[in-house]
Amino acid sequence: MTAVHHPGRLRPVRSPDAGVIDCAGARVSAHIRGPATVLVVEGEVDICNADRLAAAIRRLARPGNPFVLDLRSVDFMAVEGFRVLLAFADECHRAHVSWHVVAGPALRPLLRVFADHHLPVVGAAGLTAGSG
Image (cartoon, rainbow, N blue to C red; front, top):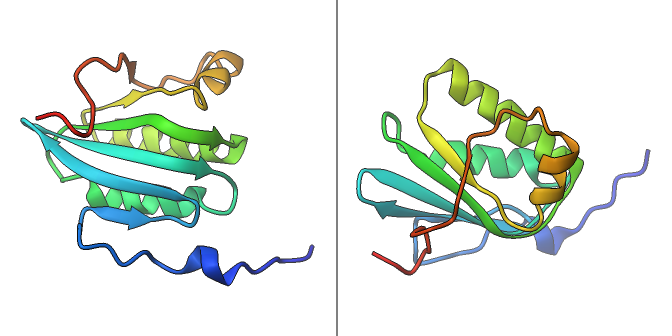
């Protein structure tokens, strides 16, 4: 197996917004919406950044508060990203964490193929990052 190093992709983005984390091809940002936190993911989720993205989500989710994982701005989701999402969902279930997923076009085909996913998928009404 040959590893390919992309130094520019692994540098963290220096953002004035402490609620934004760069995940080497994807970004996740936190937005407070009433009693819940909305975590908005943008970009591509693949084998190279899926674990890094899951760690960022764990870091931004406020313990004891419900959260929504908004994946509408994800352009591409590899099977590895979906696998990590399922493992994260299992962690949340075991810890009795209240959360939901807003699926976007990149996630919907995987939800159809793996119909027994048990993800808490909800509609997208009222969850835009710019509102509130």
